[in-house]
Image (cartoon, rainbow, N blue to C red; front, side, top):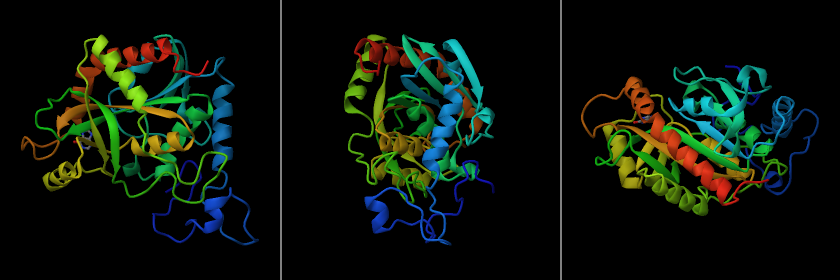
Amino acid sequence: MTDPTGEDPRPAGRAVGSPTPRDSASRIEPGPPGAPEPAAAGLYDRVRTAAAAVRARISAVPQVGLILGSGLGGFADGLAHATTIDYADVPHFPRSQVVGHQGRLVIGERAGARCIAMQGRVHLYEGHSAATVAFPARVLVELGAKVIIVTNAAGGLDPAWQPGTLMLIRDHLDLLRDHALRGPNDDRLGPRFPDMTTAYAPELRELSRRAAEAAGIELAEGVYAAMPGPTYETPAEIKMLRMLGADATGMSTVPEVCVARHMGARVIGVSCITNHAAGITGHALSHDEVTETAARVQPTFERLLDAILGALVARRELAP
Ligand code: HPA
């Protein structure tokens, strides 16, 4: 498989590119002649190149990056004074093949905030590394978005949560089998060992809860468990996830959150609970159900994002 960001697509666990004490302490330096190319070498340059290509087509620095999940991409169509850029026109950007995921950036204004939205994302189950999946999120931050709003469709583990429930992500469980920061670290992008205590910024969760309440939108809150897919979970896995403390599960989001935190952006996460997770009702799960629920919830989801963006602007949480 060709990895679109030019990374080593080898599976986790290979010795090549594994961390060394020197990697922990310093940024990437060329190894001795003939040494294997470190997996992260060039990542910084690829991020800068991609960001420069986008920057050349827009006139203002975006304040908020939005990553729109399955069936939720329509929000970007409502950005004012929009510029759209196909992922194909951004160097090193991976492209999605999943139905319901477009592949373009939309840059424009909404609720008083300058936004850059991703309509469509790639997933690990398509064969990409976690670093590749997360690459576009790096570009959003590099372009100036210091708040990243990441959204997804997810299965709900609480039987009381009806499909259509919106859940603010309080924290996550990373059960993916690859990590976006695996391999040598480049200190120009961020620290070797980023703290994840406040991965989903507490003050922005508070802001989001208040914004939802003021807009009359019910907002649940919980822990998102990232599973690799592409199969939906088994009922036994769902039981396990509940025992681990998860409230929702999906196949995305965590890689992007990790790189956003790595680069110092603050994150807000919202899951659209599109279905009861496997085994809760006994009926089979389907992608159709996921996209149908997401489409039904889209107007409320958009109102929630508008309320959050408006509150971010009103509370001066965004960079000028
Ligand atoms: N499991 C995993 N991913 C999902 C689900 C689910 O139940 N629903 C939407 N995305």
